Length: 394
Ligand code: PMP
Ligand code: GLU
Image (cartoon, rainbow, N blue to C red):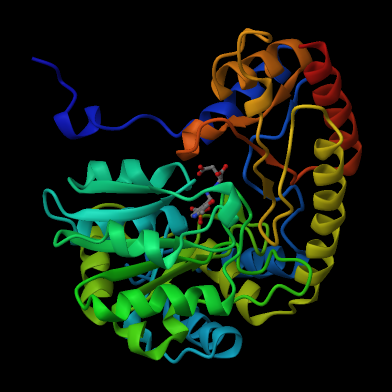
């Protein structure tokens, strides 16, 4: 009998983390690999945030805190929702975890019974389906086509809903496509959801601040009729370049928030006290670098989209947020190139051209690949030349 549990056998390790690790190892072995796999900003955490963490250490904020977040951080989160999203919450509607990832994991663990369905628009962030599977739920992946900007339409949503649907996950701007839903698009989805009173909505807003071209960010809890059944997840990882600090949070119905805390009290307890102090400064401190960094990301996005579209066989939509693009490599698959799948394409690209990207199938849509352009322009320029030469050599 295997020592490994049956529930663990249902899932696989994170493919985005696997690609990032592979690129790291190849570089350590002396290979000149450019990693466009990692989903994290290349910028450093701003100085005022680092200073707040150092002060917290010196002031002795080094003990256990309340399991689901310090009063100071919960207050900063309440104010953030009011200031940026026009949403009112009390502190007992807020939970803080070790990254948005833990908050999502706890949510599914706390709410899913065997066979409960979670609607996941595809392409999706790699961890959603596996977290659902681990919790005993059933991921219901709904294919969202390039012609719809990779976004869920009300019609598709309607046909995906069943008696067993417990959650719908929305992620805007999206990982892996960068697509952002407009206010109108969210309201149109909300019209379907308002009629189905049992469904809860999990809004993953982690890329809220990384947006371009005057894209107006809007989160579904702002539709007042749905606020009572929406869990809005966010975090400091992407907006404040704090991936290593591991702070994420959510706001929503008190019973769900309490249940998430219960799991945390029996697993990891509080997120790091020092990181929480840093997150307070991130949310309350100056915000001007967010725009500066978005401007830098925009320049990279424009360059990457233009470069990719100049390559024969590759086509790429221009997204309005996050730091990913999701180009199609379908025209390069087939007998002529001897590449059958996007995974073959990605594997050969790494082997022959030393560029690491992630296959679209990992995100639930075959024939595409994800590029994270959260890296310097110099590296992006070399990477785009390598991708071009590689594609032209096929
Ligand atoms: N949601 C999405 C869509 C993400 O891309 C990530 C990044 N891995 C997360 C949630 C979780 O981020 P973190 O755990 O660093 O807060
Ligand atoms: N969100 C990032 C990515 O998609 C980080 C890695 C992960 O947690 O999946 O690459």
